[in-house]
Amino acid sequence: MSQSFFDDLEEYVVLATGADRATANRLVHTIVENLNEPVDDYVRRRHRELQDCGYKNSKIWEFLRAELATRPLAPPRFSERQLRRIVYG
Image (cartoon, rainbow, N blue to C red; front, side, top):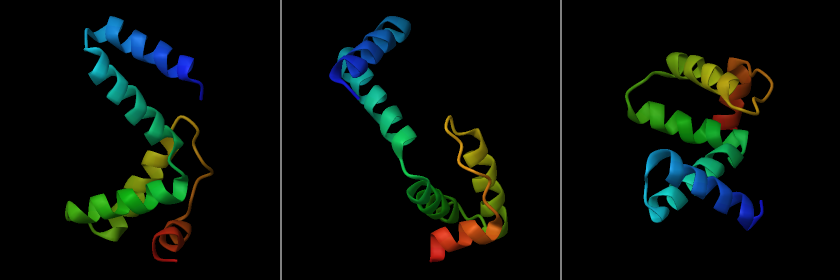
């Protein structure tokens, strides 16, 4: 992505929220990084986060399938088995 893309988004965040430039810059870069995170990395990261919150795998797989379906560029629907293979190999 070009620097002008980031600059335009940053400007929009500043105007829309009144945030300072440094905050807008961090926000834009955090969002873009999150949207560019590979699906396998996302699944592994969220699995760890949900385990740390005390959720059991049966509930985690439900959460992950629902979350993946709402991503802007949603991947194909994963079965529980496919998610387990991503996490555990």
